[in-house]
Amino acid sequence: MPPHHVSRFSDKALRSIAYIFSIKLKHIYHEHVQNEHRDFYKSVIWAKYFLKPKLIDTSFKRKIINRFGKIGTKMIKIPKEAYGHTVVAIYEV
Image (cartoon, rainbow, N blue to C red):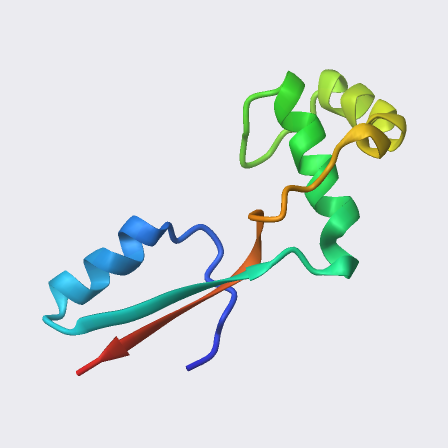
């Protein structure tokens, strides 16, 4: 059931749900990076080269990295196995 954008739930967390509620996890499906998300995906990879992930980062360094990211992201290739932001876990009761 929606919502299908589970944000920061890892595969381990989705497996734990099955264990906690005594249900069977049938499958975890990760959507590939969609065309409309390719630039965002590349910008995240670019920023990870230089910065540690933070929930909120308004630093000057972040702003500079993001500004140069418009050039740097052109060099980043998205691997075929890269996940998009949508994941679906199928459980059986």
